[in-house]
Length: 325
Image (cartoon, rainbow, N blue to C red; front, side, top):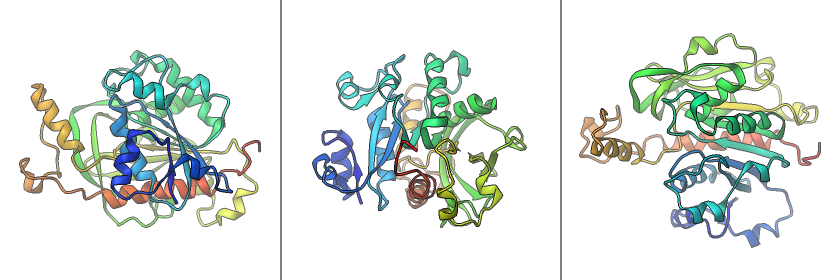
């Protein structure tokens, strides 16, 4: 089944060129079932690139997904045209009365600032608080994950001596967790960040569980899910759905970037070098460490599976059909 986006969104042409099934709005309107409603809260300056990367990851599922794009009202990016923002994005004032099956909060290039010094921090806090009762499952990425952990749990971020930059191997600490169902024992994920969250700050926090880690990159994933997976990880999903009120939801925190394209890290590396910034070549990325050779996209399948698992097990299997429940 397809992903449903605006007919004129530029990402549509890219995805259709890759033979990804993107349904036209007029076709979706004739379908006799409710699509999943997702909100993509895009904090990245180059919004069109991030849209395309995430929509590609969301497309490999038998579910119909209706995606709305959200931007901050208190800060307007300089790297995305005003026409694009006006045509395809909305602000919180227009969605605060809605409920959504899922939401993705992206990273942002502000990680070396304190949270409170980020211009749109008060607005972001309001939106993060709103997700607790109005979004069934929220997936936070990179700085978005750090911001959500700080807002919800007071967990700090720490500056790194050098940028965590490259593609690192990870292992799932909780094998029964559906988010990593079907994953290999070791799986690669790109990271690109100047700060980190530390495992010791997460351990022992009620309702918070570490899901996957890397020896080099540290914590990759954590979840807050009302302890329902921890209480009975082998319970049938159907046993729980009927009893689950709207307010019980999941928050998933990812410090890496599984959505990245094959050349995203390469582009960041060459951009920083051209600006004369201190940057080392991304680790475990170029063949034999040779930056003149094209890097393989060796995390693609795991990225697709991660988003499919999130949509299936944490959104579709749990969200109520009737939003008024």
